[in-house]
Amino acid sequence: MKFVQWAGAALLAAVSAGCSTPATAVGGLADLTVYDRNEGRPLPVYWHAGRAYVIGKPGNEYQLNLRSRQGEEVLAVLSVDGVNVISGETATVQQSGYVLQPGRALELKGWRKDLSRTAAFYFTTLADSYATRTGRPDNLGAIGVAVFRKKAPEPAPISEIAPAAPLAKSANGEISGRRDAAASGAASMLRSAEAPLGTGYGRSETSPVRYVGFERASGEPAETVVIYYDSCQNLLARGIIPRASAPCAVQPASRPGPNPFPGFAAEPPA
Image 1: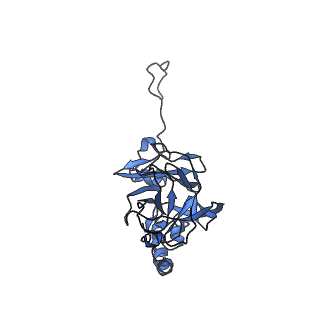
Image 2: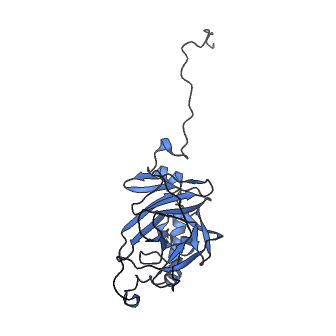
Image 3: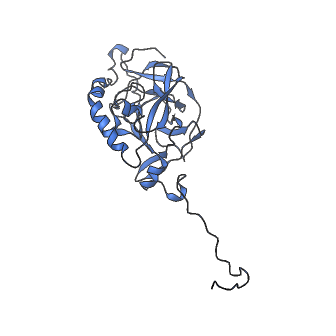
């Protein structure tokens, strides 16, 4: 595909032919799976009040696996903790995203540093999360994907095609202006018994991509997929995961049943 400038562009990353299982994937136009890289497995999804949740293990790296169900290219704009994973801006659906090829899977392992490298996603504490460290702790624990269909070709020269949705204004000024308030809010949350999990800005890894053009069929996404995450203890305390299947639940020690024939009748103590 043609290499284009950043404005009005999307990113095309290396893809694989992988797939997701119904027990771990969420979505319609595109399936979203959270994959724990340390444990080598997709995280199971727990449904509660119409929302999808996964258990994050602090310190473990993870990746987002996206698989298109469509017979044409779609654009996926992704956010983690309310932050666009490509630009680092406070996320909106109109920002740049990744192009998913028909029926193919895309593995997203981290925050985009440049066209060749990413910083690994990993589950971490509130204070260490990338969102908190950049002054935006309000949306920790949410992974979002806004999926856009591609506009059908029109019988007009390329120069007359309307531009793709503009990128949102840089959030750098907003970030610096909110640091003090965010730090205060983070300190308050840390005083709670169980602070929520966030996503850290981890080790640098090779991940080549290139710019491509993509014109959206609509200014609004055709589908928005959200998976929420938190620690096992927090999800258990909130009643989101059942105690019987929670890996962090402390099960009561079992006691042997009474024996009707234990032996002889000894004399009671004096």
